[in-house]
Structures are given as structure tokens and as C-alpha cells.
Length: 131
Length: 115
Image 1 (cartoon, each protein chain N blue to C red):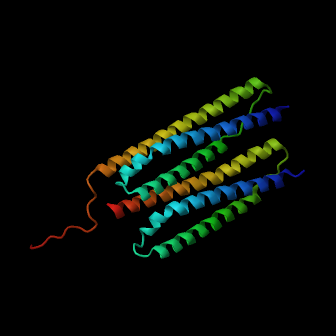
Image 2 (cartoon, rainbow over the protein chains, first blue to last red):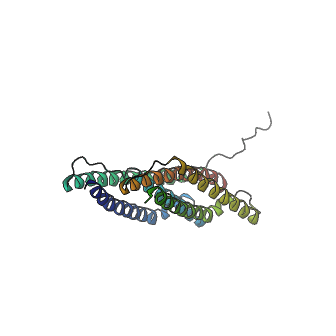
Image 3 (cartoon, each protein chain N blue to C red):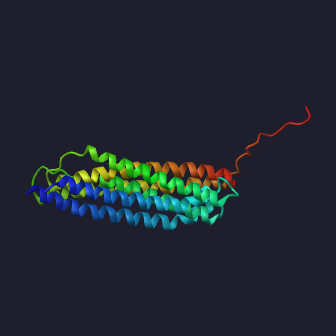
């Protein structure tokens, strides 16, 4: 029966996708705290809060995308086509996760560079006296 | 056996769980940012944050229950899994877009405050 094969495919795909997301975000956000501390100039509570918020967003985005692309359609009813479909699904998802990881890293580096630049000009325009 | 009813119950359970978890996290970590808005009134800021949390729950859970109307009739377990995944994914993606927007606005505002 074809439906059972596709169900087997879902039962394999979902745990792998969730585990990959968990693993990547654990690794990323364990190491990102140093950058956050640097960006927010050592203010620990703001750095921790922002880090946690980014982590939540990362989970939401990736789990949402994993569920969105879950639908498998195989035309021939065999284990070979199931394995091939699973391979392309999981491979595509892994590449997407890698891209997301690099985008996040880029955001951290950008924030670090911006924080190290000269401070922004003050809100009040300079006043010219004696003209 | 009505697959639609199973689908509805699973959908509501999972989505309420996700919304509550995300709301709790944002509430706990957002206190720092909200407290910076009105510097000297910590209790007032906490009240504002609590009100925001309740509004967030109401809007999101209300929207999720409203989308139940648009489900197709489910005839097989396979279709049940697929439709559940897509419906959950759409809601989660909306949540993540809102969440990133919030982070962006908050960090931009906070940079002006700490300078």
C-alpha cells in the first residue's frame, strides 16, 4: 500500500528534522553569548534576553519551515523511491539550516562591527552660538 | 471515525502549547526592554508587559481557532498528517515573522538607550 510507505517516510523525516534544528540552535546559541555581551557592552541582562529571544525565533522559523516542506509525493510504490524522496528532503532541509546558521553568524558579526564603530551622534543637533 | 475531529483536537493542543511557550519566553526576557521605556516606574512597566502578554494570547489563539473553519474534509490518515503539518507550519511561520520584527524594533530602540 502506498499510503503506509509515505507515512513511514513522515515518521522518519520529522524526528530527523526536529533533531537537526535542536542540535544546530543549541550549538549556535551556546556560542553566541560572547558576541551578545560584546555588542551590548557587557550589559548581561540585555545580552541574555536578546540571546534567548533570537533562539526562540530560530526555533520557530526552522520548525515552521520543516513542517511546511514535509509533504512527500512518490510516483512509484517502492522503497527505493521512498528513500530517494527522503534523501532529497533531508538534504534540502540540512542545506537550508546551514544557510540560516550563516545568516545568523553574519548578523552577529555585523552587530559586533557596528558596536565597535564610533558612537552615534547625539539626538540634539549642535547649536551655533555667536553669529 | 471522523478524522477532522482528531485533527482539530491535535491542532489546537499543539498550537496553544507553542503559543504559550513563546509568550512565556518573550514575557520573561522582554521585561528588561519594557522596563527601559519608563525608567523610574518598574511596577508600571511590569503591568504593561502583562497586558501585552494577555493581548498576545487572545489575538493568536483567537486567530488559530478561526482558521479551523477553512479545513477540507479529511478522508485518510495520510491526508490528516499532511494537512496538520501545513496548518501548523503556516501559524508557526507567522509567529516567527512577528517575533523577528519585535527583536529588530527592540534592539534598535535599545541601542539608542544605552549608547
